[in-house]
Amino acid sequence: MAIIEIEGLAKSYRIYQKQEGLLASVRGLFHRTYRDVQAVRGIDLAVESGEFVAFLGPNGAGKTTTLKLLSGVINPTHGTARVMGHVPWRRENAYRRRFALVMGQKNQLWWDLPAQESFRLHQQIYAIPPDQFLRRRDELVDLLTVRHLLSQPVRELSMGERMKMELIAALLHSPEVLFLDEPTIGLDVVAQHNIQSFLRHYQQTSKMTVLFTSHYMKDVAALCRRVVIIAQGQIMYDGSLGGIIDRFSGHKMITLVFPGDSLPQGLSRFGEVVEEQAPKVKLRVDRNVIAESLAAILAQHTVQDVSVEDPPLEEVIAEMFSLANEQARSAQAGLEEVPSPHA
Amino acid sequence: MIDTTANEARAGQGGEAVANVHPSYLGVFLTFARNSLVRDMTFRANFIIETVSSLSWMAMNLGYYMLIFRFTSSIGRNTGWGEYEFFVFLATTLVVNSIVQAFFMPNCEEFSELIRTGGLDFALLKPIDTQFLISLQKIDWASLSNLLFAIGLLAFSLAHLPAWPTAVQILLYPLYIACGVAIMYSLMITLSATSVWLGRNQTLYDFWFYITNFSRYPMEIYHGTVGSPLRIFFTYIIPVLVVVNVPAQLLAKPLEAQSWPLAVFALFAAAASLWTSRQIFRRAMLSYRSASS
Image 1 (cartoon, rainbow over the protein chains, first blue to last red):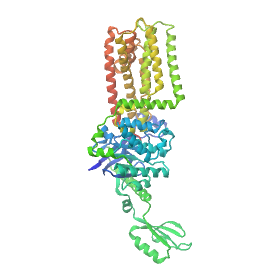
Image 2: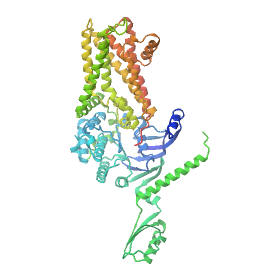
Image 3: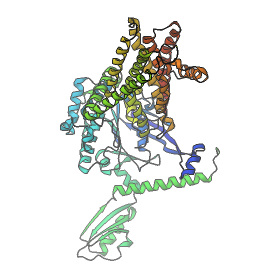
Image 4: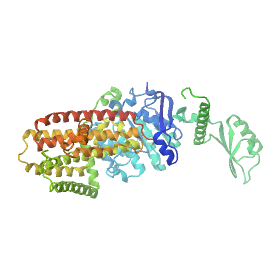
């Protein structure tokens, strides 16, 4: 049975449209115009116990809103969700002690105190028995190599160190489900890598279910087998990372290295020349004609080296995001032409 | 190695065993108190400045009323609020205020900010009563020095009254102080919670200071065409007048026959205020929309 079940989940916000200028602001005191923003528009999703699922999507796609709905922080406009059998927005303590949410852009540790004081507070709030608390804290602290930082005020920690402390705080009560909202945002490559390896190791050992958002493809590639792409509040793709390329990219990249310093002419008829730096040329070629094109190139030119690759994942996803935005815009335009029955 | 025993234990029991554990509210409160003290001590100079400044504010308050009593022998004619009776009243005001300032003011102030910035998200995740968590997270230890000052003033003033209060009066006093604090707190948390509906940067929290100003004087002064409606409004609608008046009367003007209904009403007012504030807090939490990350 799925540990997270979401059906038709939607959330819209009414946002006050503030006009520019003083006069308009005064007018706004008496007559206000609002706009409905649909952050999440009907999501269906099922996640099995022990899965590590990535949520990808452009800014404003509805990823964080979905995590907040699943954490019970906000109420949905429509739809249902169950996590471990609980309806999140009922905010039952029985549910709240079985999951955790970590947000890369917000911190829950006491800013002026050493992290260990916040850990103690968590021990009290989650009623963790003392021996279990110490054992878990020590394991997590050692795994993340932050023992020497335990007694340093949180405000004096680097961003990476702070994120490690946030993770420890979130994991002290052994949650069965973890929601991670951009845990590696703003971190340097080393810190990102450390957090990734910790999460991978921890998830594999504890079999915890993780739902995770990130803008870094490296995080996703390192951690998740399953990827859910959300754009404009809707799910656009649900499958493996590799599957994204098969499904959304009609191209492959051919890299050719020619002998000597000059490049042959006329390569553009095989595909788009993306990069040209003698003796190397990179071509973007239609997936369907890749074999013919390659055969023709090799027959017509002397080539020293050749490689055929998928286009970079970031590129495919960026294309997909802009496609989603365009679709949404045209859908919106279409809606505006039809007079609304409620107008 | 990761400690998987907890998770395994849960898997066997469907998570129910863990789900049924309850936190010790006293334990959590003591941890809040301890953490606040540790934080206050970290900023030692700030702690000292705050203590000194609030003590001098109280001393100035006292000086101001001492000055007034150079020109009059009582507040209002035949009200029974002579100099030392009124100082009992003033000490009671300071006791209530210092308790509210120490325990609730920093939290209610922060509550509006948490709503605006979305920081409330974390409070809503915790398996503990959200109102408890929001209301008592931080304790302003510097304000407790005011409490000592106020208790000193109370003892000094009582010693100058014709008779010492009886054991019953002394036992009832803390109860009515608690009622007063409960009313002040309820009003404060209610006004802070309005930020959920009022949105960005807007809160009625400041309003608390205006309203509670009415509690600082004996209710006898509210009479006549302007005074009476005010007295009725601030006794029965927003009961700030009973906050200080009832405990102060209890000690300074040992409850006359006509005061007993008011004393009974104060208990009811405290309970009703707490109940109402809890309902409003709950509604606010349902309307909370967080802030984008």
